Length: 145
Image (cartoon, rainbow, N blue to C red; front, side, top):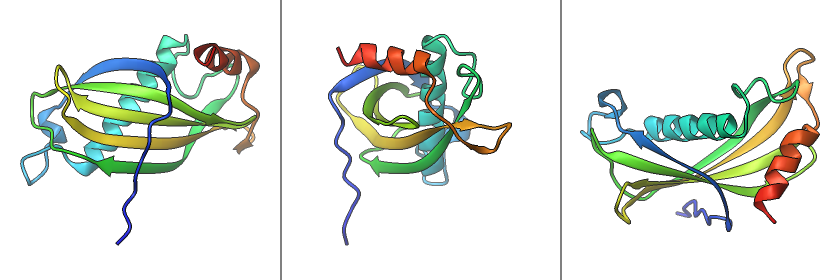
C-alpha cells in the first residue's frame, strides 16, 4: 500500500504555539486525526492574522477556501502537550497557494504530523474562485527573497 509522503518546502513563513486540549483527545487517549486538521486550521488563521488580516474571509475583498488536504501522521500527541506549529509556503499561482505544516512537540524533535493544504482565493459573494489579491501576493513574495 502506498503512503502519503509530505516534503516541506524551504520557505518557513510562520510559527506559533498551540496546546492540545481535552476535546482534541480521541478514544485511543491521544490526539485525534480530526484534531490534527483543526490544529492546522488554527495555525493558518494565526498566520493570516500575522499578515494583518482579520480572518480567512477578509483578504482584500476576497476570502479563501481549502481545496485539498493531505496529512502524514508521524507520532502521538497527548492532552496538555505544547505543540509548535510551523507553516511553510509551497507553490503559488495567480489564484492559489499551497501551505505546508509541521506539528511537533515543543522543545523536542518529536514530530506529530506533516500536512499540506491547497488554498484558493474565493469570492463568496460571486461564488467563484478569484485572483490572489496583489497585497497578499506581495507579502508572500517577501518571504521568498
